[in-house]
Image (cartoon, rainbow, N blue to C red):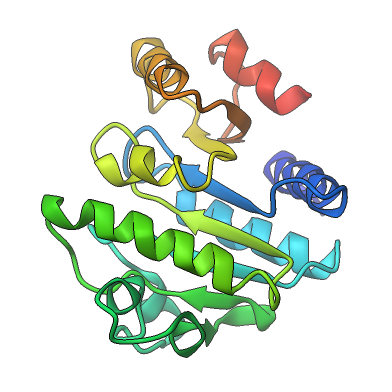
Amino acid sequence: MRTETTENYRRAAMRLADIARDGGARAALLTSPSRGQGTTTTVLNLARQLHECFGLKTLVVELNRATPSLARRFKLDPAKSIEAIARGKLSVGEAIQEGAAGIGMIVAGTQGNAGEHAVSQGALQMILDDAADDFGFMLVDAPPILSHADALLASKVVPTLILVVQAGRSSWEALDRIRRDLESRDVAIFASILNKHKRFIPGWIYRSIAR
């Protein structure tokens, strides 16, 4: 039986698939206000929906070097990472591994320092360019936007941003700060996935998922 959250995943995947097929964006960046709000779970569910329901072979790129989980979860080689691409140790093709349900994955590698953020931007652009022929869509699993600069920096490469919010976990002030930060960088929230939705969230968030 489909839950409301599953329908949210399917709705977001359908919008992404429609835009990709119309010649628009073929990549999306997912982040959340803080840790533990379900960003990685959302990325994996969207990837599965895009692949199984809309016929788009999907690549998941794990940008969250603070708390990487894909290598452990899917028994992948942690050395075949975006970090290895950034350092010139591997090509994009060499770093792609197969996760569940035929989904391609590039894992984060080890935790980096602040000075390596720009290198990650370059590696992300390289992945976006080199994987375009083999994958119909790319989903970037970014760290929490309020505590890590990687998410904001990556939005310059992948400006289609999906905000993952668990109802009751983030204050209105925190969500409004995210909106203002993104607007100052000319990045719009494409959609929001609301986990454990109880409909007491700010109207601008609710409207973004109802479109």
